[in-house]
Length: 342
Image 1 (cartoon, helix red, strand yellow):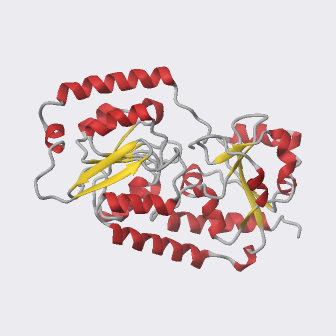
Image 2 (spheres, helix red, strand yellow):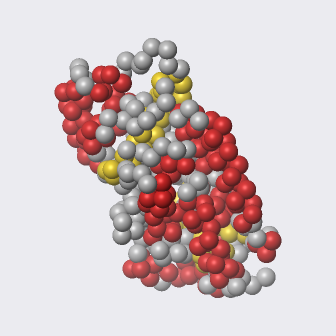
Image 3 (tube, one colour):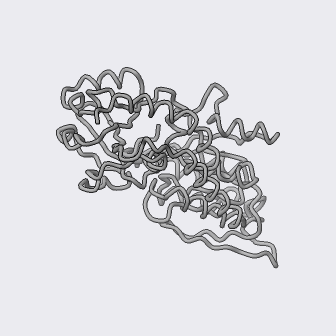
């Protein structure tokens, strides 16, 4: 699972970028990359400015590569299966793919995207070999150093302000603009909002929750309302515990690491949503007295799925994950709600 507190390992990243520069230098004077750098005359161009630069997209992208989360799903929903996407082994099933991606591509009779490593070990050689005409990374942690290399391969769209903080609807809007399908993207947003509205449960009204995480013993983090996994739960009619407004964001995370010593601040959360890296992590964290003393934890009013694909699917709002996750989410919430004393 993507952890909001991970930071790039500079030494490894420097080696990756150096290798990428050598690769790109070797192919910069000929072949597909050179052709893509010279837009065809008469084609319309769209420029999208973001935190790391600006992407000028000419014509309609046909070979899309995606980084981070959610972009592959939106591209598929807009009618283009990416030629490549960042791998996500933590949330993949036995097919090696995120199940909703595998299902959608298989149903469409398309070719599954080639997967490659991301994060600090970003496989730029494979990305270059895929000969993309657009790289989508609006919800990612791509660094300036990585972006500078990627942008030499193809127009690359990073996040608008900070890593991992774009809202789900802005992500879809951005991708729709980049693909030349703004109206279709707007329709997808409407469809998602309608799906979430239809899933809203009246019995959830007035039920507060906090979405928390850990990075090991002694740690405690709380996600902010705009973070997509929180937005997914809130859309079902639950209310984010306003205590989150008193916390200070840990830079680049869309969350606050408040420390286990502040666990008592979650005393008014009726439900706790969380996830664990594995069963050993869960046992270790739940054995901590301060953690177990959180009223919702002590009562068993906890939504903590153990199925890794579901943990991933419920943390992203996009055209493929929402219908896939909702049918699995509501029973877990109902079970936790049965333990709330009100």
